[in-house]
Image 1 (cartoon, rainbow, N blue to C red):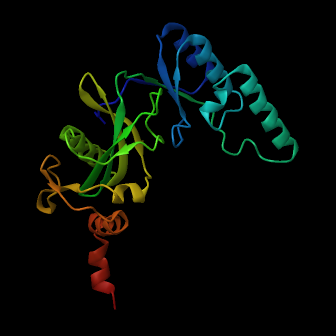
Image 2: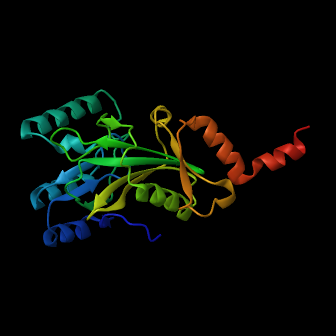
Image 3: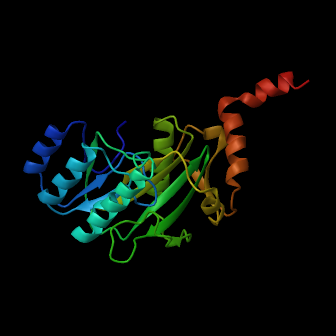
Length: 247
């Protein structure tokens, strides 16, 4: 799609992933295809650690990457706990992900990410600061709603991403690489309560909806549910059909 992202490598078999590990440099970010609150994101520091995750992902999978973090004793304890749950008849594989592995370039010196939520012509933005001593911001709860010094290149890129992917309702996480914004993750879902707390929004003019760089700041919070409904009706022009058949 021609959108800026960190360099990313995806493998669907163990052999290709192992070959990549042998020749690549570290650290690297490893991600699960699905996750929330950083459960599916870890920083891999060396080949040995990378091979452990690859073996796990191509041999049954895992529900959260943090389960392979910690001391050997902690890992054994988690395995015993899963084994006991399995013995009780619980489905311990229900939320496991595997059969593929995603490596992504690690972008240092990012103390926060920027979450932009696009709802049709509207966009809200906030900063999420990293956890103490961690590189991850998602799920930290350290949210900054202030829009002072917000880099509007992020807003323009969010609108461009929404239009390029034909995804009018989307949440995008941004980091910076050499001073330029890049898309770290794209999400189809987000917390409405967080969007509602944003002090205002950026709006693309209705008569210039295709000109994504023609937006302005509106100092009024939006109702994400109602705005989503209105933008949905306008985007798909359902309101025209309704007005002609409402009787």
